[in-house]
Image 1 (tube, one colour):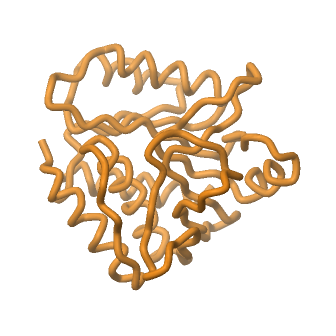
Image 2 (tube, helix red, strand yellow):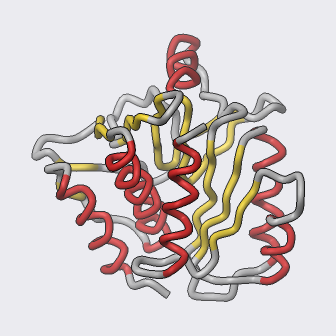
Length: 211
């Protein structure tokens, strides 16, 4: 299991290259989601470019502590990244709109910029859309259970976009669920700083940036 300090150090390494510090309050699970955000931003910076927005004076990156809307009064850090065919915004703990009309807090979301701009104009939650990516982040001391796979499948069905489960633990049943043919889901298990799975995750991010 990654330590809280390993996750914080991983985030700080990425943000430091952008000239930004990291306000590191929160629980381990929150740092894990922010570490995933940092890995996406890092890959994008080498691919097409990354710009951080919503910084506090310092400059300092401050992330949401719980799911909230894009247009909240308090500014939170997010990334604008350049892909092969479209630009994206990457957020931590932002509400997205599901096909049922309900809003859902997604741990890490990679939203097409067009979806974000439309949502801002309508003062509504953004849709993940066909090309968007949502990530459920789970950093547990206890074993992972099939329930995490079921939650990810539910998100995948509701938001109608690509959805991944990133976890520091493995589970064969979850692996089977999320790797079934026809599903736009993936399971990154034993994912932690410096692991082989981190390289797999980064490669998948690069592929997403090509969409």
